[in-house]
Length: 310
Image 1 (cartoon, rainbow, N blue to C red):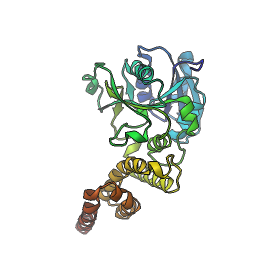
Image 2: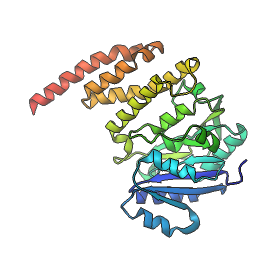
Image 3: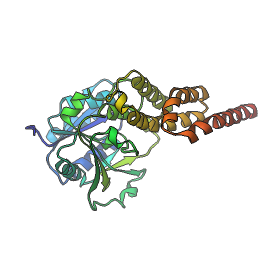
Image 4: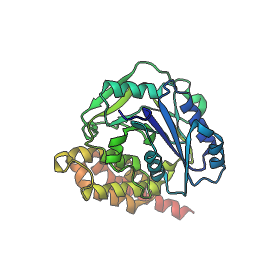
């Protein structure tokens, strides 16, 4: 065990002062006290930095020019002293028991490299009233790639990563695009020990219109980047673990492919479909492969009819 606190809580933020204040209040309400808080202001212009400075020793604040959430998380992680880094986006929240649950999993699983928390999706504060601490449970795997039969996490606020494993994986990608969390999870694929919390919920994921995940072009760019990384052999596991990687990767790319269709980005949708065709076929995703061309034609006609009516 390192000499620092058990957890370093890293929160990237940009122009979300009200949400950030709520996120920090949820961190300071933790029943576990073995943590430090690092907030990285990624180029805010709404008074965030001035407010952070006013908080004194409650947190460590770092300011940088706007470089995106992946770069901001990496900046915070470089200053971390904790044995584990727990990431929290500034528009999400924790529950008072969150770090206690992660601590329980760490002890019970003998310090896994990677832990994924359980989300509670909300849009209004009152939507959290049903969340309770309850019984603690988790699923344990030899590594993240071995867990690919199901969707195992929900955004970077799910991630609790042993600091040495995070550093060995070179942190988050700083390329433009969404999906930097999925990319890191794949690069952590062989790190020993992965656990998914199945109860209780450990973080509240806020749905709102300003969410970065609403930006389809960013999401498309991230999907393309991960496909290229897989084809270039940049993810661990070589051919031996290729099926597991591609099961996880196509679970992320199929929804993006269909979203592109719905938004009229037919060429982009076909590009993703063709790029991942062999992977989906080898995984038996025949329903998707057979249905997509018909959906694409139907969407094309629909968009043409809409255009004629304008």
